[in-house]
Image (cartoon, rainbow, N blue to C red; front, side, top):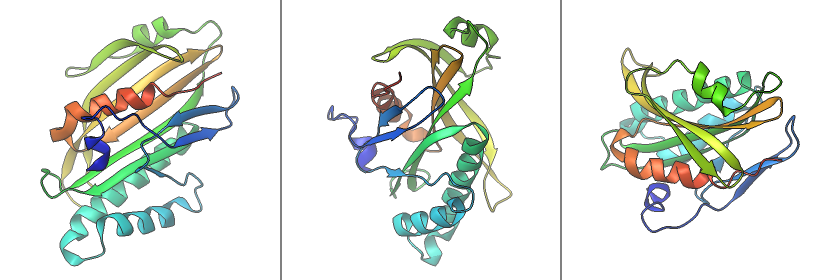
Length: 208
């Protein structure tokens, strides 16, 4: 649980992911125990399988949790490709004390086209806010942003059941573009320390 623990001692994220994008090089710093994810469609499923087996284990006892984590990462990376992702990373750690005994967080950085003159007021005005969803203006070093956090139910991979995912998205506007940094985790029992970690990572965004 080193990624979550880093929120309690004030440690700032390290390890920078920088990528070209439609608006030029953008970057974000993740904690040093996070892993950069493979975005290429031909490689990502094989990459996810290897990564999860290494982090969670290959034993029979952990198979249901391993399948759930693999499914969550595959779904996240497929959605990332559809959203024009330029970088992705994940924290995966066995944590038997948690309700879901694997600490799993994925993060996706993407850039989207926006109409001319678009600003953050448009994000606030156009967002179909749902019950249990929070929308908060935040000031990041790269500029004003909007943070949207919610819990949503999704099917659990390889199972007839579903689980709740905490999703936090940070929107930063640039001329004709919107940069989105998204985090997802099923570890709702760590919602408060993870929210602080997400804020800390978002504060490292570098956007031209």
